[in-house]
Length: 153
Image 1 (cartoon, helix red, strand yellow):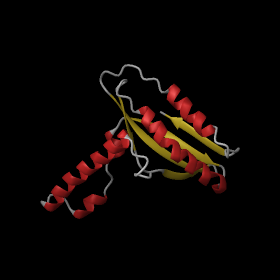
Image 2: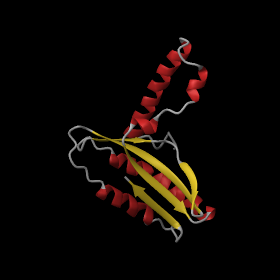
Image 3: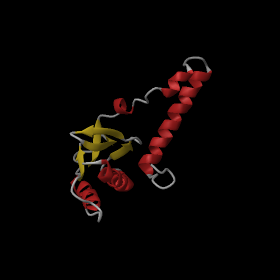
Image 4: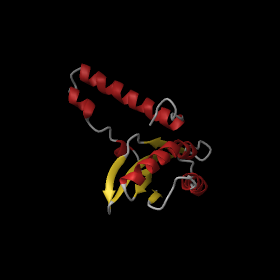
């Protein structure tokens, strides 16, 4: 992500969390309690959260995938900002890395957004937000058959 443009409250909170974690880790390295290679270990993002929204961007070939991926990625900040809702007790934690794979010959990039719910959150409806995001990306003028996007909670 372009951090000079795409940093909203969820991304800023994630950056601050990572700086805090790095600071604590460096204190341990300097005191001899950890080795330098600890800096290169996984940060445990997927162990820290219970709920995720997975955004899967697919293209049937590389020529279709690359522009479709770029467009969808550029609109993710809208989705992330919409998921963040203090009124409903939802905090969004985007994972700033895509996982690129091949599935049945398709080029696929998966992006994950962890969701935390406050104890007061009873029922949260994501349908309007998801529908708006899907409408935005599906209305792209350059979208053609072979470009797909799905979301899983």
